[in-house]
Image (cartoon, rainbow, N blue to C red; front, side, top):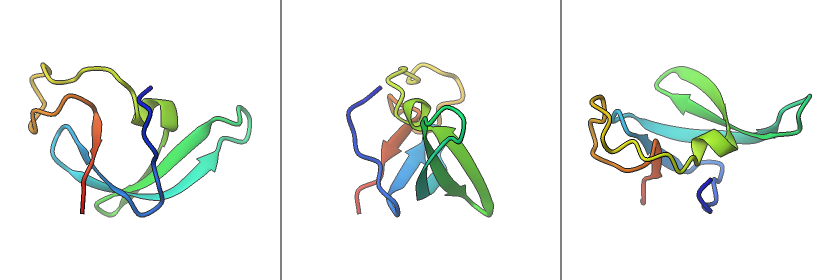
Length: 77
């Protein structure tokens, strides 16, 4: 997992091109794992923080529209 801070209100680009906005950082009720709750268009999604900040290199995936290395990369404002 990459050593980055995910904060409420921060914006992240998915490697398929869409921009997501973090709404909450929450804890899973059974595992106490940190989860990122984010808005994608009109949908609300949740993903484990470890998955959100995964260090898996997606740069060679054929569906990678942005050419970025990681699944989510922070959008600087």
